[in-house]
Length: 309
Ligand code: BDR
Ligand code: CA
Image (cartoon, rainbow, N blue to C red):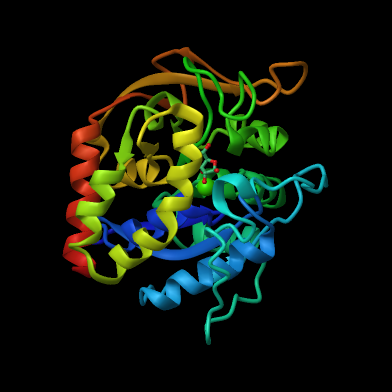
């Protein structure tokens, strides 16, 4: 039963797209809406891609466009086209035929939905935390109304993927991360500590693609570009399972080993964007320290085959 109300906050993004089709197939997660944020590409591209994916896969969730600038108002002048393509989606340059974005800004939708489901709403955040920071700053009730945030971002005991210290979603807006981490909202970090160790190999994708209909066609369209980047960077014939790991945690937390404590983000100096964690049984935060990667690959594949095969 899809009993857990969820908002997906995302910057699609190749791995974001893979996570959206996974989330739609989940057994426990009821996707209420999608909020977009700039990151892997501009806010216009990311919102366009979210609308296209919803339309193509009959995902009824409304799409709300969010921040195109950091919390402090800085524009991005260098989107990672070498990872996700100039349009964020492997240079497919897709266009939705009819679905359009909602009028409400993303952070207002986040506030309204949390208010409508006090103590129940899970926000799966797989981009910069700018929309969430705006919601926290705009409405005092937001922090108490949200049940939890599941964040793909950060790196505690492993190196970053943008700098030696910092992961992309955090270095993209450290001040927004700080607002979220100090807000008191229970937050689980599904960061590079686990996502870099859960590789989706070329063989895994090829085998799965043949079994899950149009979702498989999408995997064949978008993952070669992503794989090419990872192959060049790590030398391995597979790519890290980033955003779908956060969805998997929300769907079935037993896939992960965790610690309880307090997360923080470094805002200044060469370690800007680094996330740190101190263990403390009374802490508001959870850090994923290990993944059962086989269980993750299995749940991703089983859900896609069930929904689209
Ligand atoms: C994160 O950064 C983005 O490129 C991906 O979509 C993912 O959310 C990985 O560091
Ligand atoms: Ca993302």
